[in-house]
Length: 145
Image (cartoon, rainbow, N blue to C red):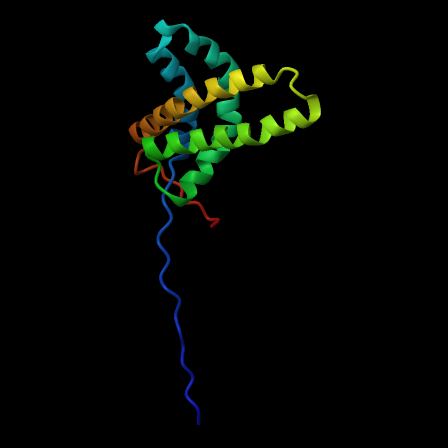
């Protein structure tokens, strides 16, 4: 008779838990709080109106996916926000050159560079707010991997 050997897979790391109420609250408040901290510079007020909705619509899913794999920290959120804007700019600028040539490229680069400045600050503010709001009693462990 031959023996059957049973191999077991290495145990998985537990998924980070996510407080959905704290996540949504921090996502909406991060651009507002960051703007309130720097309102005296005047430019962040304009950035709030031009970039705030994009931060919520695009940054929300990116930060959610980041939270699925690692616990959210200010540094990790700032890097995710910077990488998202940098990646979007790296894709949109050549596409814009192909479609429109150099027409209005300066506008795209102006808003892109402003976004590269503000997105990490807003991301770090999001991470700080999330860690402040999160409660161990209200957690959601994501079921997808």
